[in-house]
Length: 155
Image (cartoon, rainbow, N blue to C red; front, side):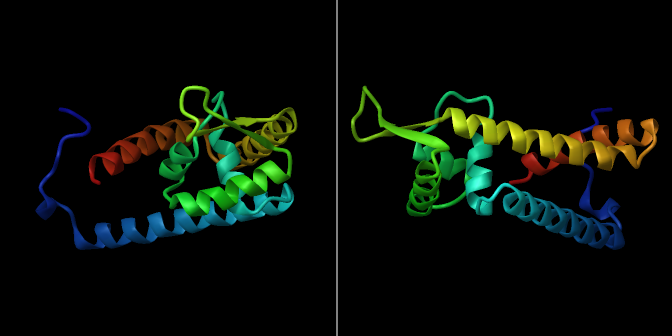
């Protein structure tokens, strides 16, 4: 049987739906709190930290791409980008093919800060996973993959 098969809503107990909702809300709040602590530790507003993390593994991005990934309007992205540019973490240039479009690229300083942020995240995630047995970690990761796929399927 397909692990992503749709099951009739009537087979889901109301207490499971409520528990799921509480857990998702609690996880979301934990993630928000972690982002805020990291932002403070790296002396960045949380929106700038989240934006900088979008450049991980990417050569460059446009403001439109960032706005879509962050789920905020372009005017808000402009302010976030301006903050990162003023800190010397990203560089803005015109697209050679379309002068109306800005291309954004991480600077050497920004890459260093991004590497430090990623190291901090990895250390934190290791501490979280260390609180579980190997079997629990394996099951958790498998279930999170199922959860992510299920959430992406229900938009």
